[in-house]
Image (cartoon, rainbow, N blue to C red; front, side, top):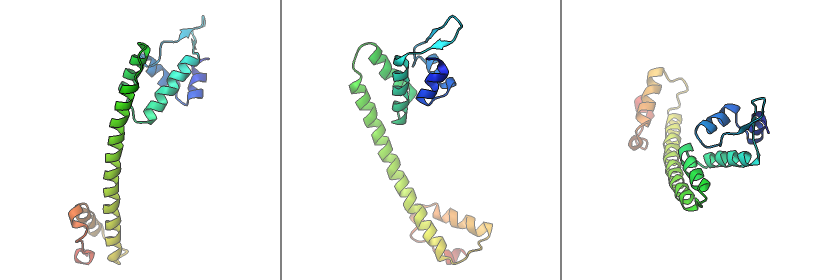
Amino acid sequence: MLIGEIAKRCGVSIQAIRFYERQGLLRASERKPSGYRVYTGIEVRRLSFIKRAQALGFTLKEVAEVLRIRDRGNCPCNEVTGLANKHLQSVKAQIRKLQRFEAELDMAIKQWRLSRNDRLTGGEFCALIERAGKPSNLKRIRLDSVL
């Protein structure tokens, strides 16, 4: 399989494949006498693994370490589980942060609607944003006092 074929099959660019090779994530492929790179099912599986790991939040550095462990003939299960748990905790923290942001934005929109003023000037709108940007102020904003 040529580089364009493996790129299409795995949903990555040719440049990405070359980058992964330079980084040691993919082994250097053999070349035909014409100079074209030739890839096998092993590279397809490895590239698919790299893309799935990235989709789960693993960095290329982490993926490289897991592949190194596996290439040495060892099972990287403990490392993968540890990294996945670390990423899960990070995702949960991001979700909590987004939920707080959602609540703040929802409150700001409700407060802005209470103003019943569809034609805010630039200065008035900026004042609303500045006041709404402080979570402790969201429950106390009285837009009619801003306007």
